[in-house]
Image 1 (cartoon, rainbow, N blue to C red):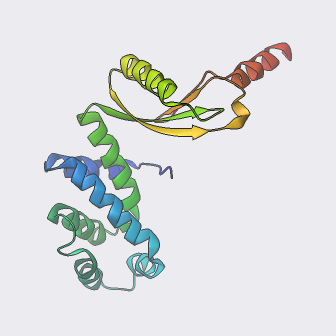
Image 2 (image 1 turned 135 degrees about the vertical axis):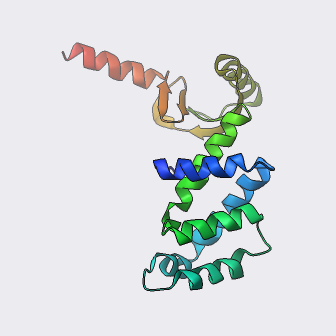
Length: 177
């Protein structure tokens, strides 16, 4: 799921990053918190209801997440609640994940191919991407039969399409001019 990251979410994510700690564990726990929030419509309704006192919402957060997640994350949830920005949580989570990738010199890349690639091809693609981007790549492998041949790469907001389909579409546009 792609979430638009607001400027305020980046600020909260940067503050969380600056507290230090085990980034991998924090990212994992942010995912767990997200799963709880997304699986509970009642929680989302309560947290977005302005007629419910903030103190009651914080009690609910303590009850659900207290002792189960890192104190920094518990405090983040409380601050988001106090500032009426609980709805920004998903965006903060995405921003924090991106920041930790930058700090650890990693990059998540979606690699799209027309057929499932074998181990050797995957290894070759990863080696070339890591060399080109000078980062450790976390691949998300996807199959899209409409590509015909070649690969497409989604890196952040950028799509690099080296498929025959893209070349044919480009040729078609040039011919129609």
